[in-house]
Amino acid sequence: MKVLAIIPARGGSKGVPGKNVKDLGGKPLLQYTFESAFESELLSKIILSSEDAAIIETAKSIGLEVPFVRPDELATDSASSIEVVQHAVAFMESQGFFYDAVCLLQPTYPFRERGFIDKAIKKFTETEADTLISVLPVPHEYNPHWTFEANTEGYLKITTGEEEIIKRRQELPTAYHRDGAIYITKVAYIKQGTFYGKKMVSIESALSNYVNIDTLDDWTKAENYLKRN
Image 1: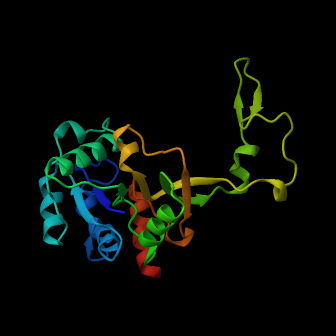
Image 2: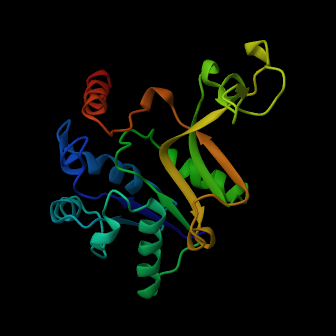
């Protein structure tokens, strides 16, 4: 299977200005994700998608391929990740490069365990899935079977639709949330405008590595992670 890794990194971050090229532990944030991808034996190609000159220059300086400059209209707050990936796939195909699947690696998730990407690709391939996402378990107090939403009359109902709540924590099914470390999706679904195919599987990330950088507090968590590891 030919898998295209796309690292999306736009400029104009408001939560942490210039975060993708900001120094974290002696190297730009972007480099952590590139190094994780570069060690993979199963990725066919690794590219950057960005409109920002500083990010592009930094990417090239660490050896990350930048085959195009992302259009400005795909670098706004309202632009979706699927549109960014669709653009990258269309560009690569216009150059004669075709892939079976896309592996989306967000640079805001810097700390993936060694071998994690290949482990994910192997599971994606062996299960014949359409999509693989990385996940973490939902703490039991936030399990959807223990959460509520208001109905049209303003009364609470169990989010999952049961009439009776599950009384014991031990009886709760395990629930997961996306953590953002990796998405792998068949190109056929990307072209349909979604990351989520009919057959979806997951890979569980290491909670100890979880830092997803959107705010200055998240940046501090990343710095503290490096101090501990």
